[in-house]
Image (cartoon, rainbow, N blue to C red; front, side, top):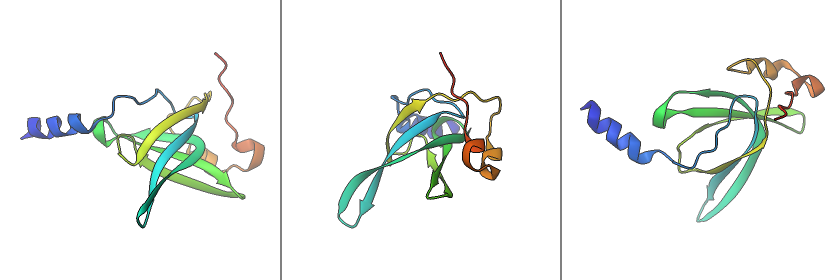
Length: 115
């Protein structure tokens, strides 16, 4: 039974996912269906966390919109997520950046990693 589930999950996994980490600023291109029309919506923000594994892996992105913090969590291998584009690399020393929720303004910034 376990092998059947692994096969199904392997078929659903995407192959062209860029390597991004917690603290990176990314643009997530998501399909939005409104009635009969379909369009692509871009959500740009800092990756707060990545959790799970294989086909169940999710990532959370946070952005500031008109002074209000907005977070969205997407499944990494979902067909709704068209592509993920890395804008800048962040330099962090933690696996989850939950402390950014309490910060406002410049304090909520993540240092950029220069390579």
